Length: 233
Ligand SMILES: [Zn+2]
Image 1 (cartoon, protein in one colour):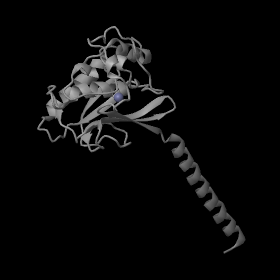
Image 2 (spheres, rainbow, N blue to C red; image 1 turned 180 degrees about the vertical axis):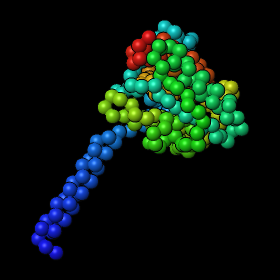
Image 3 (tube, helix red, strand yellow; image 1 turned 90 degrees about the horizontal axis):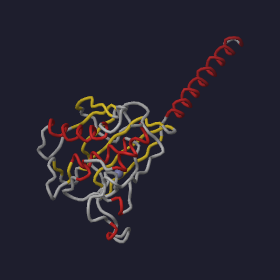
């Protein structure tokens, strides 16, 4: 091989390698961070005092909320995988989950959510689809929301309902209510964080849940103020 050919080949190789490296670096820069928000079934004994829970529903006068450090800057288009082992029809699952999304959308002029349809995809994978589905997760966690973000901008959000637990569409006493849990989880999609003070018990973003509860299906004052702090009235 002549010297000039060798030189040309070397230049070609160097340019290929450098373009591969720069492509890889730009992909790394685009790779979002992940926050996983687990919803723990019950408080750990002694973690908080139960006597501070208001005996009557004061959610319409409690202005508490806490914001996550990132938010959706565009409408969150989401898909539902209605596949379940509880005998729920796909339509009834879609109805409960979309009702939870509408509950937030009714309180702001910004369109936070847009339901796109059913899917066979699973929640918990960074795949360009915002998905709600049942799936496996460790005991003690009712549901988990995955938020992929870059800076203060959310890129993708998924929620997985733990199929280890029994679920209900109608608030049955020994089961987790789908709409109740999803209203809270969609609050995370809206950019709201959990509240763990007992005084915030009656708010949708209160960070604990119990079997059969349905009161988180409706928003309290703090939930609405938090939503509007992110998206406006
Ligand atoms: Zn939560």
